Image (cartoon, rainbow, N blue to C red; front, side, top):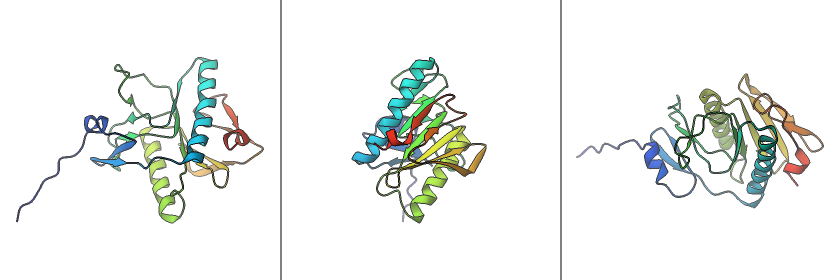
Length: 186
């Protein structure tokens, strides 16, 4: 009987993957494409962030499927690809590569399979990874219930909840930025 040794995947391997994927514990984990509503919600968040970044001349907003490379975390994760993000770090010397470091703010928009106990545990673990990497604020965006839950690195287990009729923020990660919850879920 032979024992096969599997070589851990690297960021270079991840660059060669078509479609959305992340590097976790030496494995390339392919992510399912999103549906219309979650994609539209993520796009609205990105548009608002991008307008804000350009208006204040600080940071860069990024849409879905942009990669962020981080040093290996305790979970084994080495990359993120949020649905929308804001980044204050240095841009990569090769602009075709992932951003070096975690997003300052990340929005994770739930897809149809992101509900239930198992999905909640995965989302909690990913949020913990974001905070370990240095992300300041993570949004858990729920297009079914039309709720945005804001988690801060300084209070990782306590969510601030935004509902229709309110303005959601990502303070302190994105100072001065606000977006109407009604606009996000329009």
